[in-house]
Length: 447
Ligand SMILES: Cc1cc2nc3c(=O)[nH]c(=O)nc-3n(C[C@H](O)[C@H](O)[C@H](O)COP(=O)(O)OP(=O)(O)OC[C@H]3O[C@@H](n4cnc5c(N)ncnc54)[C@H](O)[C@@H]3O)c2cc1C
Image 1 (tube, rainbow, N blue to C red):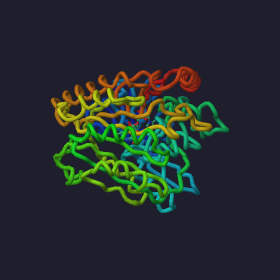
Image 2: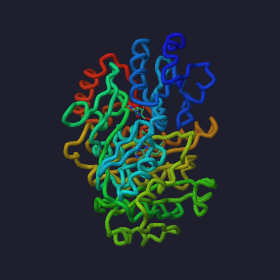
Image 3: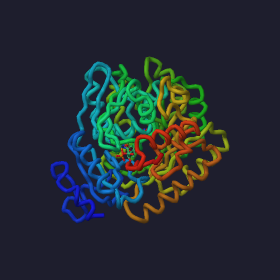
Image 4: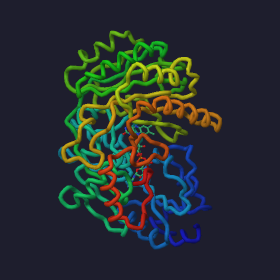
């Protein structure tokens, strides 16, 4: 494929790397460094015109195109031998006008949070500062405001997109209703997004923080949190994690070398202390919940930043009875022998996530009460093997309560039918066939 890809040389002002070029190995490196992606070429366009030029040249050369911002979700892409990896990380502009943000394809969530905060505004970002705005948004997007405000994809008002024929379109509800619907949850199957516009929310302060107990308390804390979550109002969104915390400077010293059950999250409005009271009554050894700047939420969850060797499994789960708690703790709690950094995380769903967003896109709601995520660090091949096996054990144990997949969390290939209802999937496939008839685009999760 290198000979074919040679025809692309010189594009992007020279920021295009072929196998064997000195810059190729750095250029192909994703955020998740366990993934050894070896594309036919890696292109770093500086603007939408350069994106369009790469798309056209790839099609002429008989190559396919995979857009990638950070490579947080590099895992499911698969072999890239005949693919031009189009990396958007040079396109980082973010502007805020009124209550709307416009983020270029390579912008990170931390960039948006920093631009929005001085205006007293917040975005429906997730837990990680260096996840890409576009990849997260195309796949749905759940963060600390999600139960009150729903999925980030449904806050989108317009998308700028280079289609398979190299045309730059501005897609919104009026101009391209089908494509606008598909892009909101249907992922990177429809073109290369060069920028996205979305609504912000008027929030500058939140009641947010983390509670933690020794994980030997999990048998008491997890059922109590599940009971609490069942009736919690939509203004609160939390996550419960079983964590085995290494002693690394990026993580708070109070957690070093401890195995804990932690609950973190945020409350909108004045009810924070009252809402948290039942959880505080469980006597955590750590309690950082307090009034806080909304911008601080971007680092609340202590997600790893920068290139990380990550292995994970995920699922959407329904309500969790006592048998589910027992099953989860057996594979992810004390005595499980799990090697994972995060043997299990449960994100609280429901609220606005549980009902179709008015005028929403392809992913209009999430079919589950919790999103499960298990993750480990694969610093060595042996650690990677153990992490894969331990994460698979968690997924298998929770299979009886699994209601589907949330594609943003899925770092392995999953069937699209696990993420979309039958009629939404049919509509997505028919829109894909219309806008990308030759299957030029390679997405992490294929429609
Ligand atoms: C540490 C960590 C924390 C996370 N936290 C959350 C969270 O709180 N909430 C949540 O919902 N998700 C979360 N995620 C999942 C995250 O949203 C997905 O991994 C998402 O796909 C990442 O987007 P990206 O652009 O950073 O990654 P990439 O791997 O660069 O992109 C993922 C996919 O998005 C598509 N894509 C990206 N850019 C473009 C483009 N310009 N045009 C067309 N398609 C494009 C492609 O199909 C690509 O394969 C987290 C993931 C990690 C690893």
